[in-house]
Length: 382
Image (cartoon, rainbow, N blue to C red; front, side, top):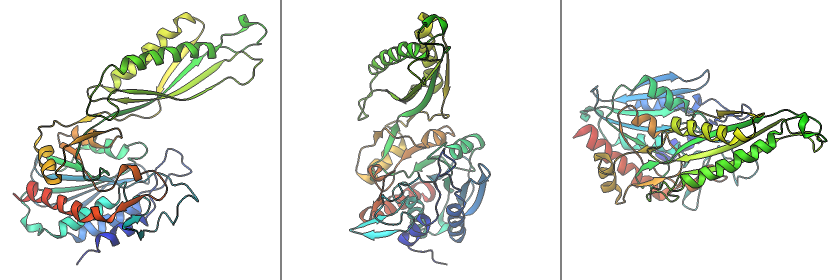
């Protein structure tokens, strides 16, 4: 049975809402997307397995071709999208709209279209010609927790030596990205009447010392640079602060949230330990105050594949572009942790992701299918 056209498949996937969010008001299941992919992949001859991630979230693992441990190609993407801004879209975000050489819809660039392009590439290849396995991954919750990719990293894959993650890169290969940590820092004191400072311990004053220490640490971090990144150094952003409730009360509690973007070679656990040490040191001049540092989510490690890696060189040849680095995080570290030589390469622009009127340019569809077909031929047929 012939599959739908790529645009028809993109329309069907966009039409299946699959928002993931830390806010339960917006969070949705991805089963609609996964069930549709499972039907198409089954029709294309894949052996399809669904892996439960949470009660209503699943990963899809589909394999085509002869089993061969440590061989073959993995093509991976996530099935979820971010929430959308109600009333700010020019059209229904869940209905694909084609105009001006673009496909508009939530997830067109980031990154439901990738699955349609994979299926289009596979249709041009006879399954019986495969000498090594082709694995398609469709993960859950990349936009919120990355729990789908974390589960795969823990449980493993049936096959694969090389992996391509189809995040939107304008068809430019990406071999590096920064890691992401989001942390909470609390300073705990004791409230009291503002007329007598001795009655309490002012957490806001302690937080002032902490913030000064963190800004000093940020300056130190900026000395470590990698020129392949647009922002070549690690960043530390102070994103929010909350504390106190009244001008006539000593502030008994203060909290700040911060974001850290790590260069490759910076282990997240080591950075967290250093953050805790900096906070505790800053509060030594406030002996009545205590601190508590915790992670807002598990974080994403930085990712790097060698510039000399076979997959990097091949993708550079196929695209005519040198592999680069990006600031946004992907699931690449988790596939790399499984021993897969990994690269990020996909149609669409990250500039269109996570905003109203997200779109995919039509002119990227055929080149993307061609690149995927050649990757399959190289790693699964030759």
